[in-house]
View (cartoon, rainbow, N blue to C red):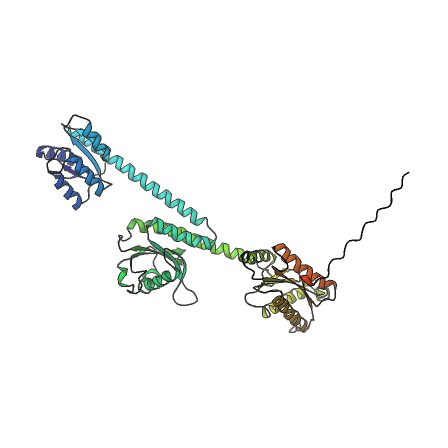
Length: 479
């Protein structure tokens, strides 16, 4: 049995001595008090695991001592001793939170056995509470590591860390790679401006210690760091830096914060934050890799432009962004004229190099905000955000003229001349769905291919499709 700190409160000096000696005999650390007032003072002065109290005592009886002790120290176990033979005081004691009651006169061995039973129950309850805590931590860690989307992972990480460390606010940031200072990734209970400002104040003071750290670092008395003018931050007093590392590399730092009316972060909070921090670091690494894999999956390997898979994603995104507005966007669908002749005459390697050069030409004659796509073969698509039909036609004509005047592979001495046809469709003028946007730009381009090539057509200038010829049925003549 693990020794415990026990306080014996009884106004009978002989009973105090007998009970204390019986408990010391089995290894417990025992203190005594002659009445309830003295017992309560001892409880307030030092920690105890168990209170053994008589019911009938002067100044403060056992029931009042039980009530006040459980209010101040809910985790304290209490065993009540009584010489009263009626059940009513015992029932009141149990309802007040006592673990058990014993009737005097009491055999020392019976007392030892009951104290052992009480402390064993205390140990099992603590183990169960610790097991529940670990189960909750494990569940939180699993939810974090299962998230592969950075936009969802970052707020999930700060919310989870703050909840398990009982923090009033939390920040997730990383040292900026393109400038001195920090890049804020997510914030809980602080605005972006507040979070960035506070993180930089703390980083200036503690960053040198956090950068090489592998375990959480606590920082207290933050009030002196925060200027009096920062009214929204003056209440922050305690901080816990949680480094997020994978194989030694620092992926980021979680900063947990507490107000001045709360105590500093405990060692248990730091342990829980460190455990969850490992899961956050793993999830950040996996999400970055997943994002990179997704990005690569949407790229054309030859030209480095986006591919047809990305086209659908971008058009859907542009339509969703405009569902409650009339701000237009446009699609250009382009096809090089007679490109098959290049492959037939010079071979497919030369044809591939022409397509690469075409992608560079498109980059030079479009905006940074435009999305460039190699749809397949010698077909290219340009998505122009916030461009109406007239703007899109001018952009398409600029590209057509640039291609017509360009000499492909001139450095190789080939001086190949090419032209293209381009079809234009705009939202919401020509289409309301992704399928119609792409299809109608393709139809406008195909009309140019059938006409005279080297042309730009917008969808609503196409001639109407010819009506189907009427079907003439033979007259029915009776036999």
